[in-house]
Image 1 (cartoon, helix red, strand yellow):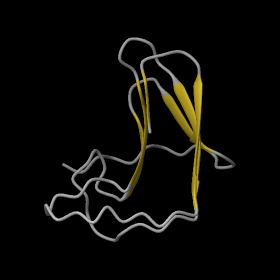
Image 2: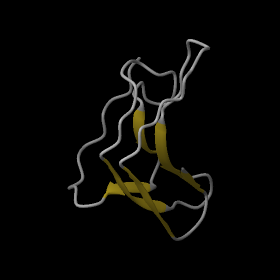
Image 3: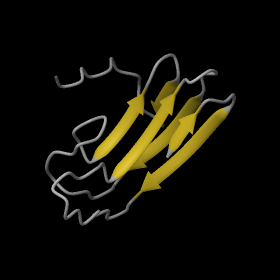
Amino acid sequence: MINRNGTGNMDVTVTNNDVNPQDTSGFPLAAIFVQTNCVVTCNSARSDVRGNTVPAGVTFDLLPTHIALVEIGASSLSLVDTPRRAPLARPS
């Protein structure tokens, strides 16, 4: 789910899923991916992501994890009932 370039909010609920992308390329992407960003107009999203089962290991996406919640620029992404934390540094 990507909330890109617009006003308003997006509410996302992804709960209790068993997600297995069955990647055969050797370069898997995230099994669950929620992103907000700014192209011209910034936006926001509120997400409830919990109780999901995803593969272990590294991905080749914006974050190297199978559950990726990504906030870019001045957009905002919050988890339901979770206080905001400082963003993690991207691996180099």
